[in-house]
Image 1 (spheres, rainbow, N blue to C red):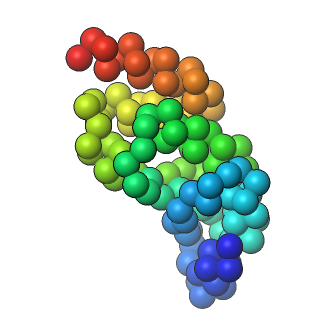
Image 2: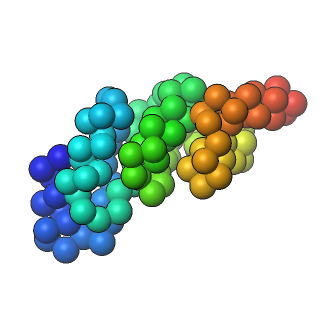
Amino acid sequence: MRNARLCAELGADIVKVNWSGDQSSFEKIVRAANVPVVVAGGTLVSDEELLMRMQQAVAVGAIGCSVGRNIFQHANPTAITRALCRVIREKWSARDALAELAETVDRS
C-alpha cells in the first residue's frame, strides 16, 4: 500500500500492483494510491483464479490489468484475453466469463 501511494506522490499517473491476496486488502491499496491502479498478472494461475482476481480488483476500483504469462502461455491466448475483457470492461462475472472461455477452449 505504501509503495503505491509513494509512486503516486512521486508523480506516477498510473500504478501497476500485484494482487494482494484478497479484495479487502486490495481495496486499501487502490484507495491509498490516489491514481488509477492496474493489477499485475503475477505468476501462472488457473483461469478461474485469474478471472476472480480481476473481478474483485475491478469491484474495488482497479481500472484494468497488465497480464503476460497468463495470456501468452494459455492454450488459447485470444480466448483468455476476451474473458479478461468481459470481466474488466463489460462487467461480466468471472463465472460467466469462465463458462464462455470453457466453451471456446473446448472447441479449439
